[in-house]
Image 1 (cartoon, rainbow, N blue to C red):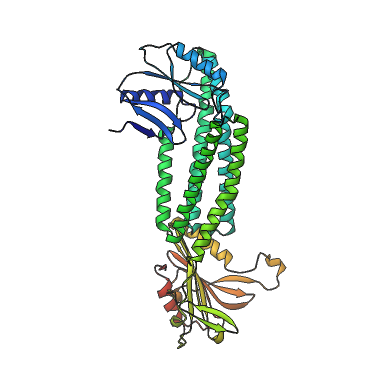
Image 2: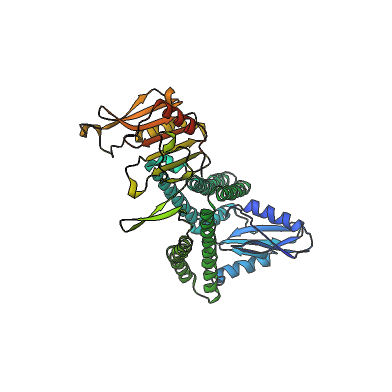
Length: 471
């Protein structure tokens, strides 16, 4: 039978009522609080007993204090004199227990108790959540900027969706803490003024634990849906962050053991955090990435290589859903075929290239972009976005061009599509097309002089109008 256990209690800092009820319930089960640390709340096994707990706050205390201050020690002695023994403390939070049946409360003046909680919250609890909230907002703005730059690329990456989801949840948890505190404080002030009574606190422990498990589940899904090489880097990055956090915590505790002052400890911890965040983390990730790249994880395997004009060229043999041979008759077998892109849970975007060797450039080539919309509600958005990007005018307004590219709708039935467009340069049709099927959209750019016959259109529709196979 184990004699100790650790619990990640996940209580709101000011949730005195919830913490007291939790600890009393644990004591009835035979578990007594021994220590609170970054690794959770440590309990030791005891005889089941019905005892009372009291959570109070001492604003002068700091998580960087090497030893308790004289005022804090005097406060503990006063509490012990009235029957309240110290169970554990964490910065401003002080937790006591009392084995008598009806103990006298430590705090008897609701006004003083409320002011003590407010001072303690302002010292570290609220500032830390303000900083996290600012980080969350900045990260979401960064993702919004990336989305505005290329929305379909962004929607096709699970990493983008995972990042937004995680930062949104973190931001939601911060707002729950901040707004929950101010909501409680408003009610508590009113109760003190009207009835001189203390308002019980209300935490959001179950909600926050559920959100944390949800993030872990999403992270697991993310790892399972990306390529193993990228999953490896994601896991290594997470481990680096975890190790860095433990190292910072250990460094701060080491300074405490050497009786370094709280002010010096705080400054040193902030400095080492910055150094590790921008230095050690960068070096580790750079080293891991280089090792992975040196191992060839990011290099696509070539079918063979050849030399042309003193340079080495690679020929790839990726499987493509549509090839030059499906459009025109050719006996040329020197093509290099490449297929790459991203796929998320809601959309995929891939580019296909079929190019002749450098020593045989008179052969026709083929390239196209295939977007598969897995979430039907995004289809109209993807359609409008691709139709807008189909003409390539490089950000120049039409008024500045005498001749400019534009998309002209053409009969779609020949392609087996729902909508079809052809690119025009002024009044001249170009050999470039945008084809819209039930759940996929294709931008097709065959060789400029490749003839697209009715049979070729039918072949293209048959090859690309169904499910896009990703390789």
